[in-house]
Length: 65
Image (cartoon, rainbow, N blue to C red; front, side):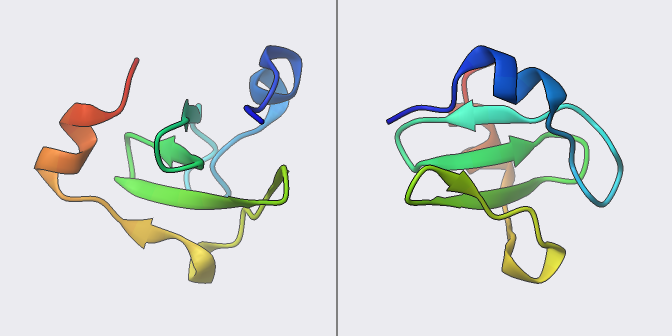
């Protein structure tokens, strides 16, 4: 189940405080500025820097705006 728009609007990257984008294909929240993807576990965003994975430039291009 995707993250609803209201929730997404109040969430921010814990590292840079930037906007997050929901990437449904991978069920992750993506920070474009930091090139990090945070997992969503059972519809709960896991916004911990040590749980995030770094995205390559190719992966980042696939994330919808």
